[in-house]
Image (cartoon, rainbow, N blue to C red; front, side, top):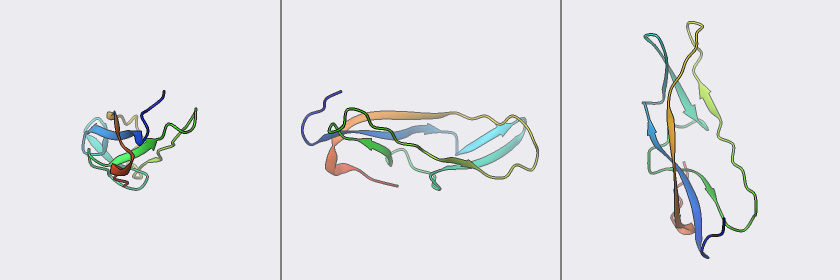
Length: 89
C-alpha cells in the first residue's frame, strides 16, 4: 500500500470491554504493552517507506485465581493520518 507523502497508517483500539477477560462470572484484567490505551491512543503506526512492516503488541493478563478458558473482544481501527499527529502510549 502506498500512502501520500507525510501520511501513515495509525492503528488504535476502537473498542475494548474494560480490558477484562471473562470465564463464567470471573474477570481477569489485562494490559497492552503494559498500559490500557484509550481509543485515541495510537498503538502502532506504519509509514509508507518500507514494503513490509510488523508490530508486536504484548498482551499480558493478571494471574488468574482459577484455571479456565478466558475470553474477550478487542477491536482495532485503522486510519490514514498525518505522520506528525501520532500519540504514542
